[in-house]
Length: 88
Image (cartoon, rainbow, N blue to C red; front, side, top):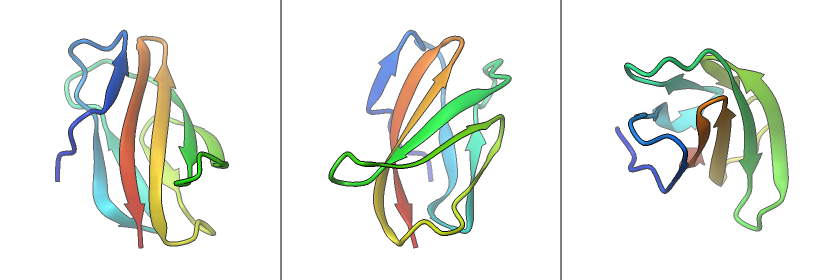
């Protein structure tokens, strides 16, 4: 499932897909054809509280993250992308 990018700062031609979404255990960051080497990722709950912070190029471990709706903010050297993520 490709989710529409809610907010893009400086990433005019980057497509980010979170696979799977809804996720269970871990989620894959599919950057498509863009040249993203690494992203600093912050996971926020529906109240805006920071739940998880990590650096990844592809996989984010969701072990210990409670089921629910989250916002993923991925910051790269090219800019920042914000996407919704559902954890089961």
